[in-house]
Amino acid sequence: MIYLSGFHAIEERIKSDRACGPLLMAKPGPRAREIAALAVERKIPVNRVGTADLDRLSADHRGILLEVDDSLAERGPDISLEEFMAGLGDKKEALAVILDEITDPHNYGAILRSCDQFGADIVITRKRRIAKYAEVIAKTSAGASAWVPTAESANLPRAVEILKDAGFWIYGAAMEGEPAWDKDLRGRTAIILGGEGDGISRILKDTCDALIAIPSAGRIDSLNVSVAAGVLFYEVTRQRKRKT
Image 1 (cartoon, one colour):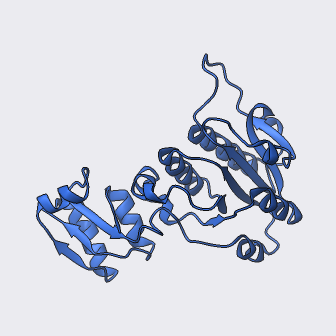
Image 2 (cartoon, helix red, strand yellow):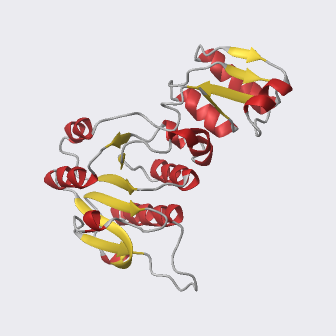
Image 3 (spheres, helix red, strand yellow):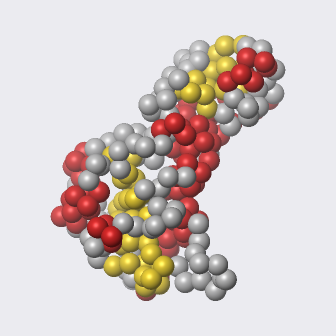
């Protein structure tokens, strides 16, 4: 088991009806009591413990912790790629996000938060490799990790081909790409985000219909991947709202 801290992460986890519990509390303030009331409403046990007990479990508990299954803690509703495709129906617009070796849990969590804010329909990752950072991911995502549908694939190039067969255009985020706003990102769109060090792997780059970039006037090489994700997702949303 692991223990989620942070008011937003705990609250959203409880709201998602996927929390294991119990909720552990020591000298709760008004915000913690609100969360406890929500836990009671959702039939999650609430245990009063000493501050020293929470100190042993987490260095940053703010008087409240939620116990969760560590195999599920960092993920939103699990869905297979096949289930996602079956549920698309005749939906003309969809945003799929493919994460290629995002290893920093803070970046992973921040990307999930942007996925939630901009309505990404699915996040596709390789088989889970950073589950041990579930608490960081949940907290950095401000609870969004409890909501964003996530699918795992041991073969990302194959996942891309499945998306293409369903009418998705595949765009890889890369510095050498064309400005994102010069591409039509409406319709069924998939954006691949590469790892913090090496970016998108060559084999995945070869599957892209185009590479897109965020032009910069800065003096350093590029934006952090989680910041770039938010900008690109916003551009997708902006184009969808734009009148044709």
